[in-house]
Length: 195
Image: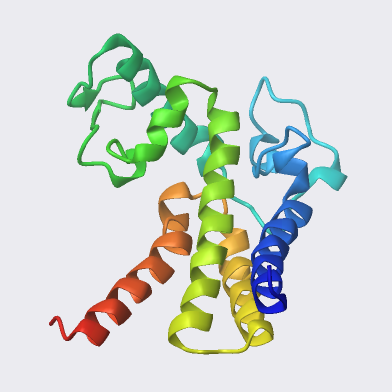
């Protein structure tokens, strides 16, 4: 393997290592990105320690919203059914019309073999490492940026405050890997003259 190829592989490895280092409590420590302070006034949850307050993530949607849909979808898939309506949320909501449920997301298939927290960790790995690699590929291949400039671009995407603050919105985080994929597709169409 030549020096140029080793540098290329090293850049992709660095993106993966940075992701693991930054997200190690979730990936390896069994934690999730959820702010326990949202439950502080709700029985039966105990009052959390002030050191547990997460200033980056002040929402509760991961635990109270997304996981509930994911669990419901996984249960239905195991039973071989996907109902049109979820009757046990308020007065009922449509399953397919609710974008938050992401019924047809291929990532829901992970829920058939693993629990929601483990599936969430693998989704994070795919979204962030996959998005980082696709962004790096786009910046070096199509924009012809240097490796260092491309790595800075990847860091800007993966560690920007908006992404970190909304890390529990899996439907929102989809753009982390789809955005560079769309840019690559547009660039390929531009080069081929497809309009």
